[in-house]
Image 1 (cartoon, rainbow, N blue to C red):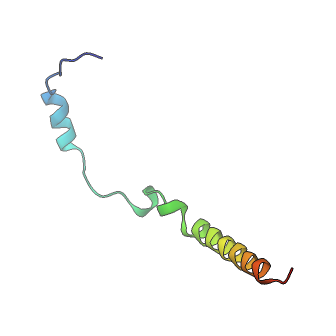
Image 2 (image 1 turned 120 degrees about the vertical axis):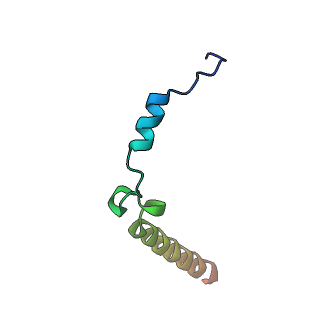
Length: 61
C-alpha cells in the first residue's frame, strides 16, 4: 500500500455533490435482525424448549 495520500479529485467531488442524496426506500433497506418472522419463530422454539426442560426437571425420577 502506498503511504502517501492522493489529493481529492475536484471533478469527482463535483459529480458526487450533484448526485441525489435522498433517503433509501423501505424496499431498499435490509430487514432488521433478519426479519420479524425469523425472530418470532426462534423465540417460539426457545419458549417450547424451555417449557420442555422445566417439565423434564420437575418430573419425578
